[in-house]
Image 1: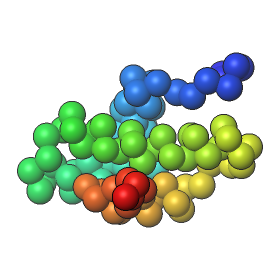
Image 2: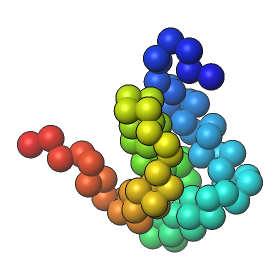
Image 3: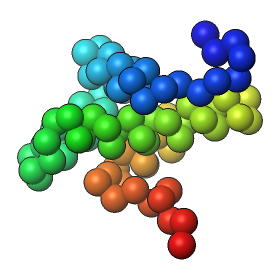
Length: 89
């Protein structure tokens, strides 16, 4: 799928999140979306946040050739709307 080392675009990440929601797998994605929306985050924005959490896993797999870490993905989802990976001070 990613022949020339290019990373997924934002649109592809959002599409992947939408697929995860449609399939209910991982269920954590749907739970996170509901939680964010219940606290007033617009759906579109919540999807973007989830896509950010997903991008970390996708990047790591592509860069380090590891396997997708569902546990870490879940932890990143739990942290939303805070994005602990944004510390660039």
